[in-house]
Image (cartoon, rainbow, N blue to C red):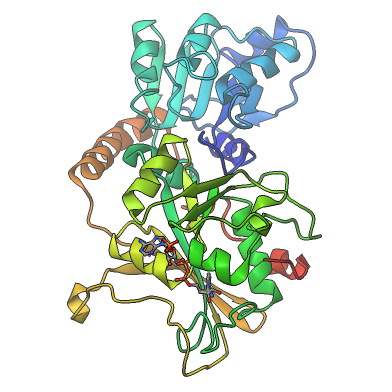
Amino acid sequence: MAHAVELAALGPVYGPNPRVGCVLLAPEPDEGAWSNHVGAPRGGPAPDDVGDARPRRVIGEGYHRGAGTPHAEIDALHDARRRGIDPRGATAVVTLEPCSHTGRTPPCAEGLAAAGIGHVVYAVTDPNRLAAGGAEVLRTRGIRVTHAPHERASALNDVWATAVRRGAPFVTLKVATTLDGRVAAADGTSRWITGDLARAHAHEVRRRVDAIIVGTGTVAADDPALTARNADGALAGHQPLRVVVGTREVPAGARLRGPGGELVHLATHDVHVVLAELGGREIRHVLIEGGPTLATAFLRADVVDELHAYTAPLVLGAGAPVVGDLGVDTLAAAAQWRTVHVERLGDDVLMIARRHRPRTARDAADADSDADADATARADAGMGTATALTDSVGNGPPTASETVRARKEPA
Ligand SMILES: NC(=O)c1ccc[n+]([C@@H]2O[C@H](COP(=O)([O-])OP(=O)(O)OC[C@H]3O[C@@H](n4cnc5c(N)ncnc54)[C@H](OP(=O)(O)O)[C@@H]3O)[C@@H](O)[C@H]2O)c1
């Protein structure tokens, strides 16, 4: 499963679909399986993580490369066939429950059954009610199915899973402030509060999200392009949707209308309308880069999941504060956040915090069913627990060395 998770992590962080990896293990007896096939397998013996007494050979591996491309299981079946191996009787180790519905591609559960797979081991139950039920489909086809929870497999898609369960995007709010919490000076000047490394980091985050949201106030004040750029300043291959919220028009000559992601203007002040509209477009992760008005509206509605606070060693004493009145009149009434990452970026400091919300009944039920499955799965599958990821932006925020490589980039 650890190798399946590594494969899953090769998939794109953005987009409507989860990152999924799949490893096919030769049926037992291993030697017999090999004697019938042409060509040596690329993989060595797989670690004993599917409950078998002996190491098993990897006969195929695959991962999902984004919406419209084959799912991990089908990619792994193709890989086995490319190697000249018939996957009949093999064990499929997959990070997410195989899907049971026809979306952009046919259902994987059917694909695995048609290929004659004998045993499916999966780590995470599909939170997508449309696609879930693959395990049941496989069982009705007489295929052995093992649910083997794996922390890292869950962590890899936690943003996606949150968005899918909720039917609305995961929300990250980015703010860049002075030490005294100002986002602009008294005269309104606000660009480049933070330094090159902090801005490069922010571009790295843009490359990982599906949409960036600003209010019309930021468009008027800063005329941002809201593009995702690579370290060399070139436009990144993936450009998030550019969303402007507010009743004022986006000026004809705005940089937002230039090259980059699709521009969507939502003439509303209702954050729930904004999130419903974006959820309807299968947007899983939004990054709010607006000014204090938008930040206040999203925080007040308590829809922010993660906070990226870049703080510069600068004290202004006057100017717009990062956030307005949230209706909190005593400390005990303040929303709870947990720090998941702290990083120095040149002279600035980035702190990433996750909103800490009590578990809903649905979350508790999901967690309990995972815990129940856990004991069975460990006995059945002999799994080890991997280290959990600590952040929401897929592979995690770039490391200091990654950000050091980045150059000064435009807003
Ligand atoms: N340091 C930073 O991180 C950062 C980031 C972005 C901006 N800024 C600075 O922030 C300043 C702009 O602040 P801002 O607050 O005007 O920007 P904003 O929050 O991006 O835009 C505010 C405008 O959005 C519309 N709007 C959308 N949803 C709303 C809601 N729920 N309630 C009320 N209005 C809503 C309103 O315009 P309509 O009248 O059109 O409806 C409102 O005037 C500039 O100085 C900019 O440079 C700083």
